[in-house]
Image (cartoon, rainbow, N blue to C red; front, side, top):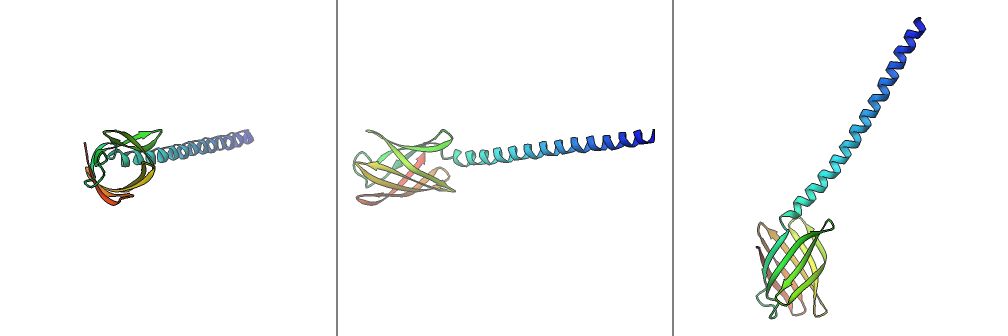
Length: 142
């Protein structure tokens, strides 16, 4: 009788320990999922203010390139940029967004054009490095 009671107490403690380990594992896994999704949400929010159309001007650029739009959007979970001109669109590559700094490369007549911008609220300012030399670019959110 006494041995049965000791066995039942020991068995109950073992089952309780096993259940507690399962609960602790579940809580740990759930915490990792929340942490990972929180980082993704912060990344999305960080670029959210950049998304949309920005009207740009480069005062001393060649005709047809002096005004246009920079269109930032999300594609397959990545931020992308397209330069829209009256004559058509230019694709961009090597888009980098770090804090308030944005840079990318586009190509005009086979020449790479490096663009470096700084974002302050609803305004972008920066430099365009072209074969004709550096030029100043400004853009405002549409």
